[in-house]
Image 1 (tube, rainbow, N blue to C red):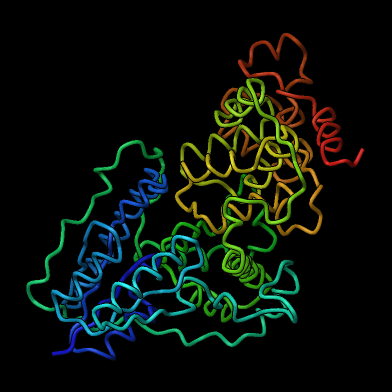
Image 2: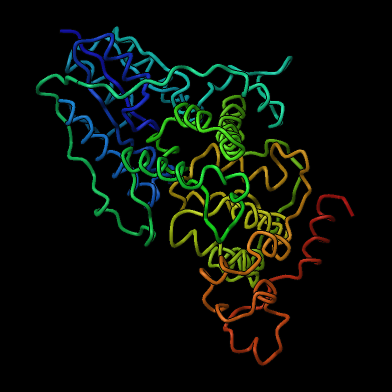
Length: 457
């Protein structure tokens, strides 16, 4: 009997899973493996919200495998050590894994190749599992990656995606393979009160309902903060509980402007992956430096604390930060606003904001989180790096009746729509009853400081 190992990483699904499909085709028996790496904890990336969502995903994956005669094997330890030990235990000839783009993923692959190569076990790394189009497969003339989204999107849109494959009917796991008990969502403390449930089944059901009810209107409504008409699929994509290739295919079959706008968002995800694959240092360093001298010290720390707590005095910013803490998720338009406010109005290092997001976001990952923060801060791929989003103007445009603000900032629940984004304009006696802070900074002062810092005044 021949045996292969499939190492699950950020691809926790059975539908459209090339590594699993290849392993089943190559061997009589397959060991589906997930390794809990202590290095993830040491790096601070196992935030409670993602740990709980991960537990849901692993439980769902195990249940799906058991319905097909298999099971998920869980091990804890350095990935290369655990994979090599398991391959030796079950006599596996090959290991299959999805390609990654982070420095961690590159290092993991490097260590796996060495550990398995020393034992004569082949390592097969599969592209277009975590992304729809493999990073590096679409490049401009004279460069190893696209640094601007629009030309990348044009080329990306012409690519023929690989075929989407159904989940396997049967998975045979060798007898006697040792595994640890799977973690439970309930074991995790410190999670957001309204954290969504995870897992492939939940993700597929969510996409089916959203595609049926909201996909057609996505182009018109995706910035409607109160309407909350976005797909909320980002956590499932982050953990690979949904296939981006399958989502692109199903959206294109649906057709229409809403589907096209949704596919464009999926392309943004691939765009960031190809940037980080070519420039892995961009996870911690400016992709394009502006020579910023970010504010530090006690005053900046006080402003950051108010921003984290949703007490800046700017209602749409505060609403968004409170949504983040309560749900472990934030509306996409809101992410842009709070990031612009921190980096450009308060002039605080984008890495501080990115770290806070990673502490709470269930979809927080190095690729999209860090590069989106840099895009807003003007140190990334934005072709207009010095743009500043005005939270009052943006609030009136994308939350015109203040419903989003009222949902998350109850202090302003009774403020009329005309003033909900500018409560400081209320009569003094009314303002005193709100128990809501004055703005941290005048927007004009913040803009002037930012322009001076960037040498544009």
